[in-house]
Picture 1 (tube, rainbow, N blue to C red):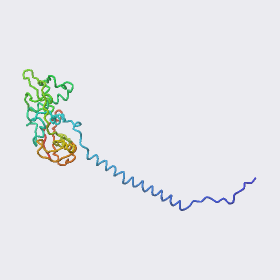
Picture 2: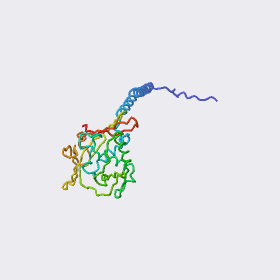
Picture 3: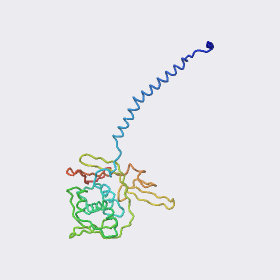
Picture 4: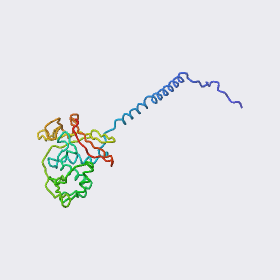
Length: 275
């Protein structure tokens, strides 16, 4: 049997218009891919390079300085006697060689206490620290050439500033005592920058001195921001604690730590007002 052929069936033909559209679409896709490869990718690499060139400030806790937080925070505690409180910010420059002897001893004791919190946590009992421990802490903080004299500290037990030095026993002893509860200006610090090289580490931070007052009529607390510990130079007022309202006007202090080339460790050298 012969197959019947459908004479009415038309042959399949391509529409020239669709062929042109397809070619143009393909060319467009190729052009887009080339643009991405040539321009977008290098721009992303440049942005990565810029990010690497301007790193964020390093947390001092990650830097190999001798107890950065001991040096700064423990001298900013409200429970400290006036001669200790904000010691680094009482003048425009403080050097290790000219620091008061009792401040050095206090900082050494705070280092020891910080490293043994469970041992010295209870200030309601008699605490004893060997003179040799204090000497080792002084060297760690201020370097091998540190100058000091063992001496008693007059203060209170809350801040570890009332140790009596026993020359015969070569030991510091603290007896429980009452703590001051007087209100005072709080010290606000904010890290700006940390730089490290072969010889030293510098840590810059903004330092503000803040008082507050609660307004009964408005039922609001207002914070008064000063540039000095004595709270005489007002630089800003805010409704929240901090320096957001006057960050550019807040003074900057720079701490410098020098490297001991024999041990590879760093020790405190000075702090000064730089802005």
